[in-house]
Length: 200
Image 1 (cartoon, rainbow, N blue to C red):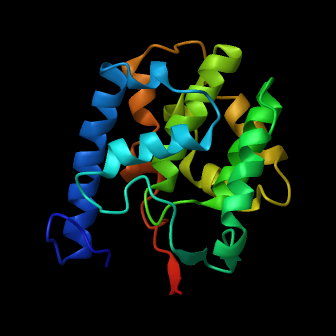
Image 2 (image 1 turned 90 degrees about the horizontal axis):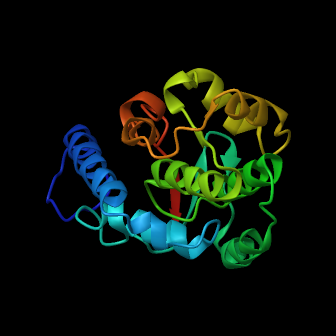
């Protein structure tokens, strides 16, 4: 159970409110043109997105996590290497689709925030794709189970996630509906965001 600004003590209630508030904030992020003024592919941009989505819910919004986290048998980047990993991701090329997805995979391994990585990173990914190749992902046609499995395997082999996301590319880069599908928490991440943490 994460400490939150809402004073909620129930995990189920927190998840419901978190989804409602973050979706509202994501819509504002799109409608207010905030993304238009951010540099594509930078961690600072991901921080801005995360802070915007979750600042009304968590004190740690936009802040690099201060705990090690894992999911199942997979450990995300250890704290001791996290800052260096983020610096390296900033320097990764993003001139074509493959390079952009490779950068997305590395950011997923870094998992820089305590919570809300998936939603923030999908907005971040679409922002890079939009600016780099004039396309975004139509998340409504990406199968949830295929996506989760491909993301879990992507640090070892990224061919699956590349194929899955390339098949869902669209030129509807200014569609609010397409954009909002990327942060549909209940569809993509139900049961996926329960992480083990190690407080240091």
